[in-house]
Image (cartoon, rainbow, N blue to C red; front, side, top):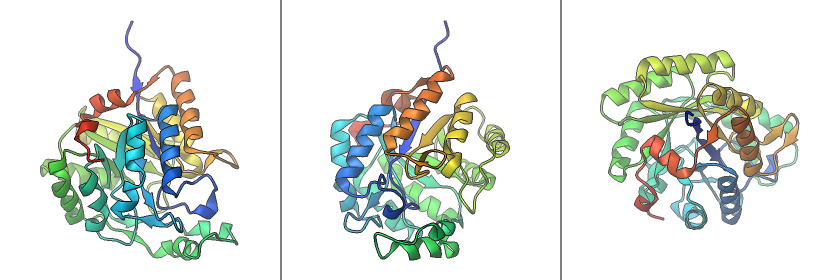
Length: 310
């Protein structure tokens, strides 16, 4: 009997778009980030994609000390692969964005493969009372943000982190980002097997349509052959439909409160683990198995937890 296909679940525990006002479940204190990350791993997430927050006001932070407040706890209580964002703030330099990865040398980091309009300003109209002073302006003014990821920025991140043996989660928000990655791969900045994260549904990127997912996958096949793994991130209410579609056609999946605050139509998720549990059920009902952290390490060619610095 043939072995069942393994599917990697990535959980994005907290991120740069949503704010504390939008959901009480969104963790921003170190102890809450750690607790939710550990629970997500126990639910079946092989990879934990992590941002840091300022514990005083919930704002996005690139301060390595804020990462240091939760990374050791997560590493001590789970064997999940830790993936540190190099995105984070939309207003800071690539040098600031890679500082946490340089300090902690994780197994994986996210890396966006192109500059783009990146906006979530419509969310500002949904709330009248905000927990913290910075939140409304941060959200409302995102219609003026450009998420900068130039070829020079990408090279800077790739070359600075190369000595650490870090594997990148290449986040591709549109089909052109796949061609950017192909150029960088041919230039020797990255080594296969590569790990693609198709990001669908962010305002400024490709829309969350099934046709777009198929188009991204077919383009990746043409550009990268068989030497890659792929996953899908559906933003907002596209999270579970696109994750289900990806799982059905052989892909890996990403869920988490960074990408969507909901567990169903009009229902806020109570935790990251709740989303992981739901998508795990979908994967197993489709006849696949959820990959363990060590299986994910083998599939992606990771250096192993022993090579990290936390």
